[in-house]
Every structure is written in structure tokens, then in C-alpha cells.
Image (cartoon, rainbow, N blue to C red; front, side):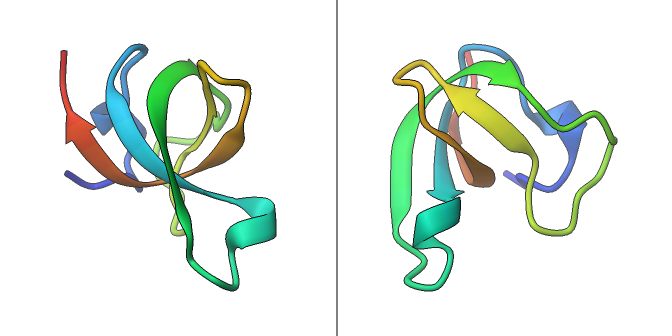
Length: 66
């Protein structure tokens, strides 16, 4: 599912994000959304979220909806 639209991101869903320091390598971090940080409805690089583990990144892929 598309990580560029805020409507696709919900608290508690499983996602893969790219953290700021991994943007060049494209390495993805897997986790569950604790908080949605982007206020706009669409962002071309992905909606920024806080994962339950404390990492912050932009959603590249929604794995599973709950």
C-alpha cells in the first residue's frame, strides 16, 4: 500500500520506513507506527512516522493493516 498518503497510515500498523541516515542506501527499518508526524495529507517522499521502537522515518511500504 502507498506510504505517500496519510489516509493509508494508522496507529499500530506494520510498516517499513527509511530513516534519514539511511536515505542514500535505501535501507529499510521494519516496525509498528506509534505516532504520525506528517500533518499534510500527501507527501512525495512518504509520510513521516514515529515507530514503537523510537525510530523516525518516512513510510515506504505498508506491510499489514490491523
